[in-house]
Image 1: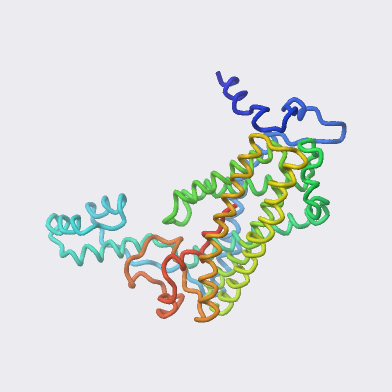
Image 2: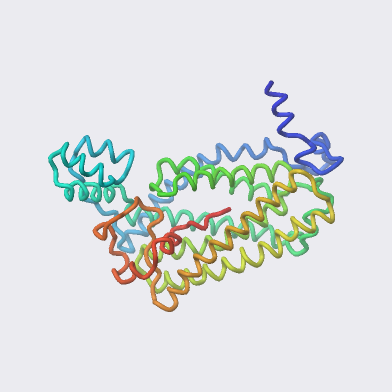
Length: 379
C-alpha cells in the first residue's frame, strides 16, 4: 500500500520532463552526482543543531550586545491571579461587551477593572525588547552568512550570468557542493523555525507563518528532488538579500537609533524593489517561464512551480506597496514607527513601549507599522 502511494506521488510523468524517469537519475556518469531526496533528509537533524546554535548565539553574543546598547529585558507588571479570567484569556485574549458584563456580575468586579486585567495580562505575555533584539540579531546573522555563501558560489557559476544554462541538459545536471550546502542550510534553518515557532515570541500571525514555513520547506525539498537547483539557489539568494537590511533596521529600532533605523529601512525598500520587482521577475521568473519552455518544454511539475513563482511575484507587488508607504513616511515625516506585528495584540496606549515617541507611534497606521518586524519573509 505504502509503495503504491509513493509510486503514485513520485510519478515520473508529473515531476520530470518527457522521456525522463527517476531510474535515469539513479545512474549518473562516473564523477557526476545527481540530487537524491535522501541527501536532503540530513537537514532534519541539522535543524536541531541550528536551533541549539541559535540558543548559544542569543545567550553568548546577542544578549551581551543588547546590554551594551542598554536594552534591558524588563519585568512586566503581573496581573492579579484569577482562575475565571485566566481560563477565558487562554481562549480569547480580550472579552467582548457581553462577556464583560457577565464577568462583572460573576466576579463582582467593575467592567473597567476587568478590562484593565486583560490589558495587564496581555502586556505580561508581550516579549521584551531585548528578546526581540536577540531574535532579530540571530536572523540577521543567518541571512548575512547564507547570502555571502550563496554569492561566493553563484558568482563563479556560469548560469548566474547566462540563465539559459539553468536548463541545458536538464535534469541531467551535476550536483555541486555549493548547491548542496546552500540547500541544506536553508532547509535546516526553516525546519528550525518550524520547531522554534511553538516556543518563540508569540505572534499574532502564528498560523500564517506556520503555513509559510511549511510551504517554504515543501518548495525547497521538491525543487531539490527534481534537480531545479540552479534556479532554486538563485531564488533563495535574491530573497535573502533584502531580509538582511530589514533585520538590521529592526535592530536599530530596538536600540533607539531612529535615524539609522529610518535609513536602513529606506535601503531595505530599495533593495527589495531591485531584487524582487526587477531581478526576480525579469531575470529568474523569465528564465523559469520562458527559457525553460524553449529548451526543456513544459511538463506537469513545470506548471506547478511557475504558478507558485507567479503567485509569489504578486505578493511581492502587494508587499512593496505597503513597504513604500512606510519608507515615504520615514523620509518626509522623519521616523519609522515601531512595529507591533510580532507582539501580543495591544489595545491600549498603556501597553505601548517607549522605544519611539508618542508622535511617531501615531505617524503610521497599524497595517503600515506591521511590516517592520518581518512580514516580508516570504521565501
